Image 1 (cartoon, rainbow, N blue to C red):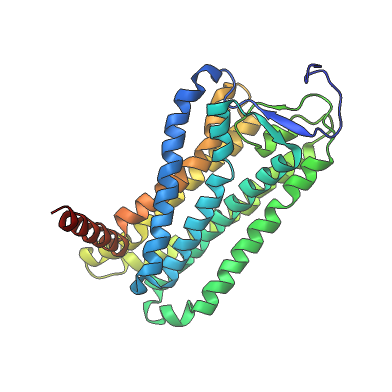
Image 2: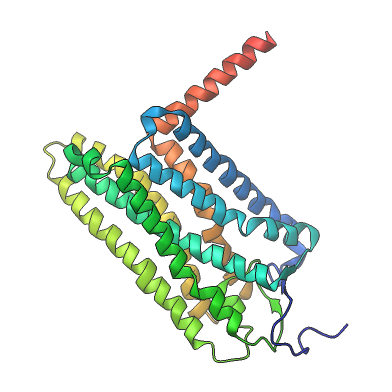
Length: 322
């Protein structure tokens, strides 16, 4: 078999994912926290969806957006984690070229959708705090559907150029990707052509796409904080701000890893390769795991309903055993 590093080809049928270069011997051990985080993400997000569906009092715009976030987290983590675990457990490194481009698209599409959902949730908190009497007349079910469709369309179109640009480049150097998944810049770096357009578009998405989302979130929270500080008592201010704390936590858990990963992949040339790969996995693993935990702990309605379900089931099990 010829060495894939020297074979010339323009359209490889498969790529080879190395996993975490330099730490191949520790893949089995590394898979344990990865698998645990993925299991928590799956269980937590399905629990959120189940509770919101079963509890009529949670059929409100805020929880509809939370369900959208849960579905997005499930798709985002599931688009990568099964293949990552297959690499770690079974050394299954090959991925079809088209499957690689599809994975690349799903990662960036649903990352952009998640960012858009955070904007929608910020708008929801703005209306709830700044215009509480008009909350249900502004955020009607029809308006929530329109916002949801706009977020999905925005993310889908924003990520669409990624696979098309990656597909048009000739790959005549190697088909080995030093990563756990088909990350955009990791794929583009394999091309033997001038790929500045892909790099520039990636930066455009980070600074103009996600950057605009962050800008709208900041503007919303400036208005929210102004409304909070105008409240007459400290208890009222703390109680109102508490309704936003969960949202702020999940925003930080999402944007910090994704911005850090994007910037280090382009400018952190002196950093070890395995560090780049670890950071590149954090925004795919950490937010889907943390989001249901944060909302489950910080949101009283979800927490109470979950405790009620667990207590009821525990009582039934105890009665059956007795």
